[in-house]
Length: 391
Image (cartoon, rainbow, N blue to C red; front, side):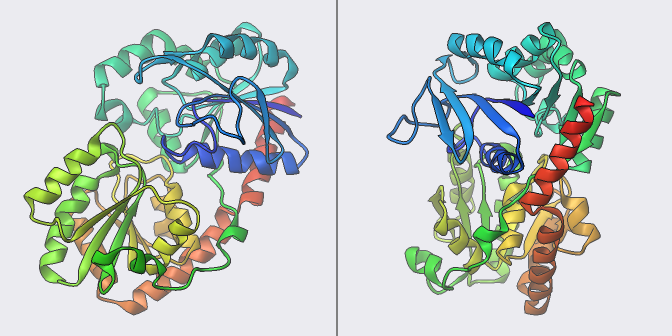
C-alpha cells in the first residue's frame, strides 16, 4: 500500500502541538509494517538545518517527507510548490490521509483528491469539535466551514477520530453520517522503560529544589484551561505551603502573557515556574519528580501528554473535556474532574493527600497505556481500517 499523508506541520516541529509527533510516530510503524509512506507538509515551526532540507525529499526514520516553504501571514498561508507536488504525487498513492483542517495543505489536498476521485481519510484532531468552533474566531471558522471546508469533510471516504469522545462530539455537532472510525494516538513504550534519577528536574530549578510540584505540560493556549489551573492552584497554595506549579511548553499566540498576568495578580510569582518547552530527557525528568500531571482543557481531542505521563508512572488529573477522559475513568487510571476551579482543586487535593492513591493510579496508568496505546497495536489497527477502505 502507498499512503500519502498531508499535514500542516510535521516532525520535528513541536511548536504547533502534539500531532506533528504523534503522526510521525505512527508513520514510522506503518513503514515497519510494509506501508510506503510519503508526507507532504510545510516548514511551519522548523528551521532548515543539516538534517532537514526544505522543498526536497528527506528520509526520516524510513518515511519520505517533503517540507515546503509557505507565503502569507501566520493566520493563513499558501504554498504554490506544495500544490504542484500534491497534484503529481496523488496519482502515485493508493490512499490519502489529511490532517487536520483550517489550513491550505489540507484544503487543497481534499480538493485535489476529489478532483482525481482519490479516496481520502480526514483526521480533524480537535479542529471540528464544537468547543473549537466557539473558542476563537468563531464567526470566521463557521463561515469558512460552510463555504469551503464542509465539502472536504463530507467528501471524505472516512473520518478518523483519536477518541470516542471526539467522534461523538463532532458527528453530533456537524450532523455527519459518513463512515468514521476511532484509532487513538500511540506511544513507543521502549522510550519510557527507564526512568531518570529522581530529583534531576528539581535540581535544575531553584524554586522547586525543596518543594513538591504539580505539572502542566503542553502548548500555553487558551483552550488548555490554564486559567482554571491558576485559580485552583491559588486555593491549593493557601492550603499546602510547600506546593509549586510548573508550567512547561511553547507560548501559543502570546497567551503566556495573559497567564503571567494572572499569576502576578494572585501574587503567585514565587510559586509558579515557567520553564519554556522541554525536550526528550527533560520531559521524563519533569514527570518523574511531579506529584501529578494536570490537563484541565476546555477542549482536547486526545491528550498526548496524558499518556506520556501515565507511561512514566506520573498520576494524572484531567478534565472531562479531554478526549480520553472516559477511558481513564472506566479503568480508574486517573482523576477526572469538571472544567472548573473547584472540581480541579478537589481532584488535585485527593492526590496530594494520599500517597496510596498516587501509587495505585501510577500502576493502573501504566497498564492502561500498555493495553490501549502501545504504538505497534495502534499502527496495526490503523492499517486494518486503511485496508477496509480500499477493498
